[in-house]
Length: 382
Length: 174
Image (cartoon, rainbow over the protein chains, first blue to last red):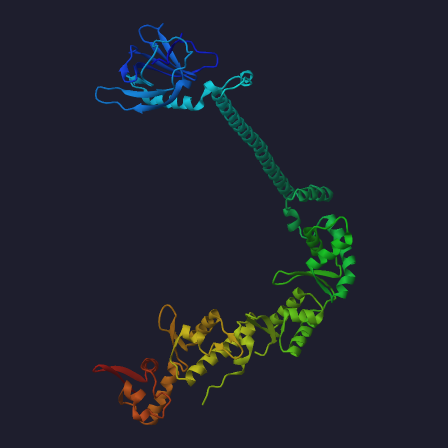
């Protein structure tokens, strides 16, 4: 009890009250002290006790004096206690109620309960060690070891706190940023709804809007990436762009098709055309749409889709039956052929040679042999 | 006399189920006939599906081709539709192969019966299939279930009647 000093019960500038509890008696070691009924106050810096009857009587002990503390459970006729072990009293302390004490610990007896909460808050406060946060100017003072220890602790705590703050900042920034995104998504949804409704209106009022406007609007929709139902249904009318494109393709592809025996896979066409154009490349979609218009425009090319889904461009003059016959002849010559072998033989791509073989099989001229070795075609002897 | 394989047996495409409908039809006909002739030659009356898949019928080691399971099932189904096959169990793991249909057997038996003037007589089943008198006949050695089916077919034509004799069965021809 000799570590306690007289206090006026007022809190310092940086000090805040944490918790207070009535009905506490103080013990010096195991002996009852003359402070038997009062209010125990815990602040961020000190432990204070004020007499219940005499409010002027107030004593305090700095929390830095506390080494450690523990709970002592209540017994029969005994209240629960907190035992507080203390550092030795410093020689130059201020006057207190006890000049000296044989004990290095005191007990706080909670005669009106409340020890659990008090213990918890005391633990918290002791962990935080707020009394060690000395203002910056004082940090530069010459240090003895104990003070140096305290400064280092401040540094770490300070750094931890800064990190925590930074984390909170980042969190806030991220959620703000995503707020914009979710707003954008909502707007986009509205846009899509709007364009769909306009497209529908166009469909309904087909006669009232001029061709030009319709085409212009359709191209806007296309550029926004919305597939327009109108072009699919009104099969004949494509956009001007596709029409022109189809004519241009027919010109470009005439020679290459003849070189390749009249048929080219759409992927080959895509590569060829884009390589030729250099700039202003075609998208696959545009290419397909343009190719679909060949027949309408009475161009000498055709877009053909096989059963397997492969799409080719072939010359009008391309003779189907000839292809089949030649394929069958080749197979009969060699006894049996795979698609790869036929491709090598004829100098065409594997894809196209496979299509030919499949076609011949469909016509009943060939039959297949499917095994672990691969797919082979034989003349149909069945 | 060893079994003679048809030309298709050595034709690799025979072991691939043909996608072309017409070709497939011809292929299946050839397979059905192969199965039946094989079973007839080796006097096989029942087939276990698993064993059959490994047997030489569907497995030609010489050209390293094996008919896949689903194709085998299709062939069995074809045979069943034509009346040459009957499943013994629900799981379709074993079946009876009737390379001659019950009606055809019935006809043969009846022919023999009438040829020998034995109409209106009663025979036990055993007599028919294993009796000394029938040794030269094709239906000699016919398994009982097959014999029974054939007689049932005749019964439907009212040319025979199956009856119980003590603890075995017998038949009377008309």
